[in-house]
Structures are given as structure tokens and as C-alpha cells.
Length: 221
Image (cartoon, rainbow, N blue to C red; front, top):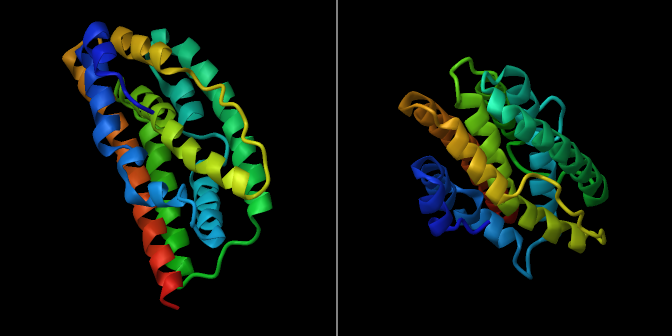
């Protein structure tokens, strides 16, 4: 997703902070998802990425569901409910992609990889159930924002596997920007939202790092 700096300035500094985090540290800036959208990408690398994303985000309840249940910010509820419905469709898309991708490619250190993703999943669960006002909501918001770049990779995989990509029904950038502005009522809440957003990006970067290492390990078998 290309984040509009003018939109950030017009709506407020809180959105500018979130948008900058996504632009600087988001999935779109990591070399692995970019490589996975290239014309010569190995099918086994695509399959590995799809399986890993399904491990991390393919189960219910997920980040957005937990945030909707635990958020103390009533102004976020409508957005969170819409996002939860939209992400239900994303999970179904992930499940279908995982099925057509075939088995997980043989990779050295499989047990360690599974343990690493399980740790990430636990960290996301804890983040999305945080009692710190703004933290869970910030995490859900960043998941939706960063998912646009994840979707670019998934849609490329879908085409490679012979599937028609699904249309995303997640909230759009304008809706999300307006929400961020409305929720950042105090500096403390704004900081908590930024923390939740940063942690989502950190977990995604960790996953892409892991997938990059796994691809390298397969290539050197």
C-alpha cells in the first residue's frame, strides 16, 4: 500500500505516525516478499510463504478478533467488526491457497521454524489482548494496513497456482486514517497505538526473515 503523506498531514499527526511506520518498516520494504512476486520465483518458495502465513494468521480468533473483544475504545468497534469480517474472508483465502500450494517443502531446521512461528503467534495473541488502551487497536490497524502488501504476494501466488485472486473487503486507507485520528485522544493512547503497530511489523519482519533463511537453506541442500 502506498501511504499518502498529504493524507497524513490533513488528518493529523497520529495517522502520520502510523503511516510512516508502515512505509518504513512494513512488508513492502522487505526483500523477501518482493522476491516472491518476481517472475522467476520458485514454486516451493511461494508454497513455503503461504503455509507460514497460514500458521501465523490463518486461525480464529486472530489479532483483529482479540482486539475487537478487548479494546476499550468504543469508537473503534464498528471498524474492528468490519475488519474482523473482512479478515474472516482473508483466512478462507489463505486456507484455499494452502490447499492448492501442496505440501510444505522439505527444509532443514523444520522443527525450529515451527517453534519460531508458534512463538510469533503467541506474541500476537498477547499483543491483541493487551489491557493498555490503544495497544490492541493499534495492532489491528497495522495488520490491516500491512496486509495490503502481504496480499500482493498472496495474489501472485494464487495466479501461479491457477486461482483467481479474491477481492479484499478489509477497511480502506481513508476509513483507517479517520479512525486513527479519532482514537488518538491523548499522547498516552497515541503511544500505545504506535507500540501495537510496531509490534505487528516486527513480527511480520521476523516471518519474512525466517522465510528468507528457509529459502537459502533449501537452495544449499
